[in-house]
Length: 202
Image (cartoon, rainbow, N blue to C red; front, side, top):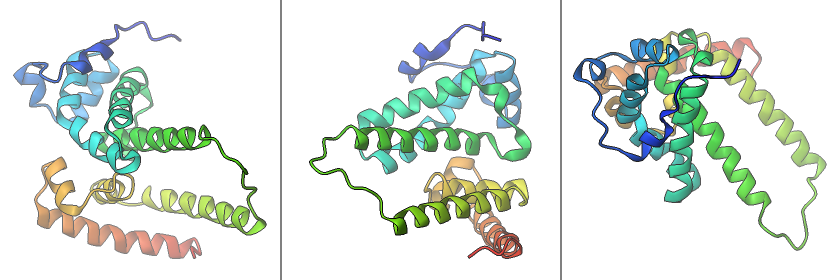
């Protein structure tokens, strides 16, 4: 079914949007619930809250401001049009946004690379094909193992893994004490390692 809601995408060019104080005080879970219901204010609050973090991720991957800004805009546009795909049990809202941005940035990097002229296109060797297959398998194993972690532990590891954030940056982004982030990361890594060993991860 087509999305018949209004499209607030143009508002992202106005960084000084003024969401109501009531909306800005809501936690991410409530904002996501309202986003699914078509609340534009919820989207504005999420943008104000996390756009800079998404920009940081995009810049790390792309290295240039213009394409990174494109990723930020498109991330929140997709968050608006595909909000019904969000599942709280799979991770926090910020992790979901990071996942969207990470996928888009990597895809954009690949498109830009493929569009560059090459005098002699390289054909992957059998060793490279095998390594690519193993990398895909390992990624699937890691993602499956992450699903087994407590949500707060999974959030820290996802932000580090997908977003490339340091623990201090995670603390600042999520509003969590740095010591708590350290504890969640340590426990999360311990449980992740155990889950991967159970899958015969190499």
